[in-house]
Each structure stands twice: as structure tokens, then as C-alpha cells.
Image 1 (spheres, rainbow, N blue to C red):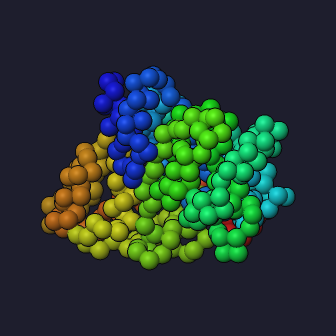
Image 2: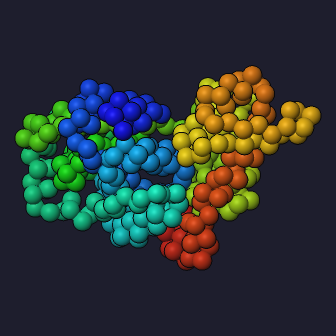
Image 3: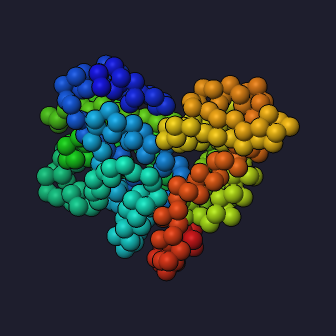
Length: 337
């Protein structure tokens, strides 16, 4: 695969890349660069994680090796969204969700943040960066990621750790949601100030809540998202009740899920329709699907039905696992059930 095709594959469905030029240069220099995605273990694992995970499938096709950082210490730093005592349990839970809840072709390497973030050299570099990073810059970097309701010093340490992870994981690319842009920009600016190179930062868009505009996707807030081990009945109900006005693309979570999850992993999508409405219709790309939806040639209920069944199949392994291991979820708390 030539450089431009690799670049196009990496770039598709992204919100922003810092920078396009640096990414092209990296792909020219390295046949197999390394990318990582960090996931702070802050709460129940839901389908919002699938957007960057799908991007990792594109990375793999483009010759990029993948690492997933189970960011257990980050979850503690974020206003104790995970306690020190619960850290190991949460990390194990996230690893299971990542491994079984996603249709990997080649599983990435999984690394717990706590396995290296307490080492002497790492802590020394964190202290070094803290002496040149201002409070206002750290606050701006972390404001869209951590809670920041009654800001703790740990929340200002958070972006320093995330920047250093790029160096200590020895990666070329960091992947994350567009809400992390300020941390990514800070990492590019401040790593060279302590004699490390800046990396390529790739951002995926954030998906609208299933309830539509104005609500954030969360596994805790009812009806806004789907846990990867939700029951088949629950998945069908949540998708069926999801916001999806006919012909409207903007802020439509169902259409976004087709764009960022279904079409990147399916060669063909068959939407079943009654004969009086034209019968079944097959799509081999998202653009055709979007055009037909805008023209109201396909009905929201028909595309919801297909989406729900695909998610049910996709999550089958992790759902089976947690059906047999409910005690693990109970130990994590009622929000995880």
C-alpha cells in the first residue's frame, strides 16, 4: 500500500490530526509506526469507546501497530473517579471489555499505566515538566477531560502523565477523542522542552448521546449509551428509543454509529424493508446510505433494527462472559450492572 493510501485510511472519519504533514512524514519514514489509545478506567465501559477502536482497525490495515493503555492511575487522578483500592479491579474489567467486546483481527498490546507510571524516571520527568508548565496551561489542557468541579492538584498532574505516556510507551502516535485536543497540543509543545520528541496526535469525533443533542453519552445516564454487555433486549430497546429524525443527519446518533462503527467493519449493509416500500436495499458504502436516508428512502425504524442486531452480535462474547461473572460487576458497584 502506497503512502497516500495509508494516509487516507488513517485520516478517514477523524476529527483532526496534529499534523497531516507530520503523519505523512512518519508514514514515509516508518513502515510500522506504533500508536496508542489511552482509556481511563473511570466508569462502566460503553460503546463510545468503539469510535477510536474502529480507527485502530484502520491503523492496522495501514501497517500501524496498536497499544491500548489501561489508564488506571489516570482514573484516580481524575478526582478519584476510581479509588486507589479499586484500581486493579477496574483495570481487569476494562481489559476484559476491550478484549472480548470488540471484533479484533489482531489484538493490540495491553499495558496498565500503573506498571510504569510509578517508576523513578517517570516520576522525575513528571516533576521536571511540572516546573515549566504553568497552572493556567495545565488547567486549559485538562479542562475538557477531568471533572474540575473543585479542582484537585491531581487533575493538573493528569495531562503531564498523558504527555509522558507517549515517551514511556515509545509510540509515534497518540489516538483519542477530540475532547483531548488541549492535552495533545500540550504534549506536542512540552515534550521537546524536556528533550523528548513530539508525536502525531489523531483525534476522533465524539458521538452524540442516543437521546440526541444536549445530553452526553454515558453508561451511567439511562438511555444515553449502551454497555457492551447489555442484554439483547436492552440493546434493542435503547436503539429503538434513540433520537433519529427522518432525513436529518446533523447530531443524529444512529447515523453517526453507522458512519463510525458499522460501515468501517462491514463490506455490505442490508436494510430490510417491506415490499411496498421497495423491498430490501443493500449499501456498500456510507455515502450512498446517507444520501438515501436524507431522501427518506430508508426509514429510521428499519435502520435501527439492523443496527441493534449488529451490536448484539458484536457484543456477544463479552455479554456471555459477564452473564457468567455477574459477581465481578457487583463488586465494582451498581453502576456497572
